[in-house]
Amino acid sequence: MCVHAPPGARTRGELGERRDAHVMSLTNSKVSSRAKIVAHPSKFSGVREADRTYRAPVKPELGSLPFSETPEPPTQRDVTAGGVRLRVAEAGSGPCVVLLHGLFVDHRIWDGVVRGMNQEFHLVAPDLPGFGESEKPATSRFPYTVEAFAEAIAGLYAGLQIGRAALVGHGLGAAIALTLAARHPELVAHLVLIDPMLEPERPLLENRLAGLPLIGNLVFKQLVGKATFRAYFRERLLSPSANVAPARVDAFYESFNTPAARGSALATLRATSDPRPVLAQSIRVRSPTLLLWGRHDELYPARFGQRLAREIGGAHFELVDAGHAVPEEQPEETARLISRFLTAPPSSQPRKPVDFGMRAPKRARAPRKRSR
Image 1 (tube, rainbow, N blue to C red):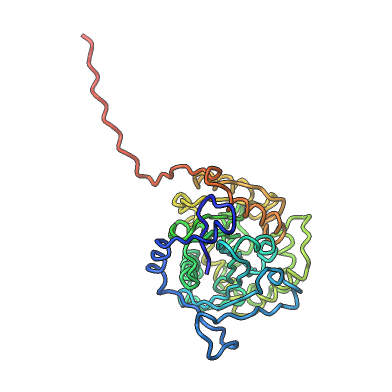
Image 2: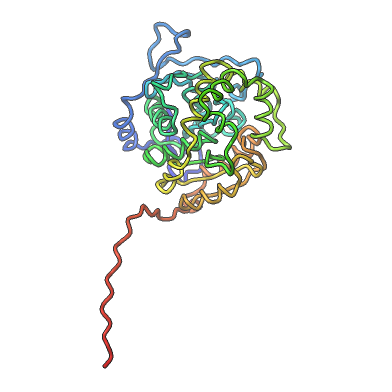
């Protein structure tokens, strides 16, 4: 179970001993009916529901994962949230930080960030619905919109009894995190958005292809091979100077390369092609917010992040020497900036009042006296 850190706490002991009982009750009353922890079907029999966790196998294509270097043995569990089974990886101890990945990857994109934060925080990294080892439901059961993803994560909070926690998202995950913070402010103590999915400077090829009914199905379900996936990752998500092992990219491809996963990725592209509803909710965010942006991001240039920082009152903005995939390319710097933000005192997290369009009516002017 995660423990919420009150703003300004500096040590793990100070952060870890408190719990917001009011928020816990509020959270459970709102979303507890939508989530429950369940056993992995092939791992357990006759085990109490609360103890149904298992040790995550190391995938050979990635070698030894950073989760294996955490103080506690790595654990994964399945949680049913909003009627969808989610695979969740957890590591470390301390205040809770929830990590949401982006499109075409899974929770493993946070491996290096987890290594840099697990001594002070409890990291919770789910595979989003349709990705990684999570269930990949048909669109008739799950619409793959940003709002649907956000509600699934709200259900995850209830299923794991997280209460109030820091929320970090990258790309699609950042759009989900922003939406969750706007819709359920009681769940989000701090918000970190890393290169969130916004309206691109020019229409993205993958979005144009996904919008074509027949061609989109053919391309995403049959024609995208390992070489194409590698080229997309290298040319669109990483900076020219990135030092990312090809095995890492190949591991993400293997996760993508099943009929169900390809279908989920296509459904997500189609359902999230218009980011304007997400951007419209930015003025409703009240949590202390940090924006991290890849200096060389070609999908969403840094000036978009500066504009978003102005929309979210009092948000901090930091540039990182990376492309779009900041957590993969610069995990140590990402972990350092997030940790510094989460442990900073309240005085260094200024918040400006947010205008929700409810201004006081203008006073009527007194009539001018005419001079005789």
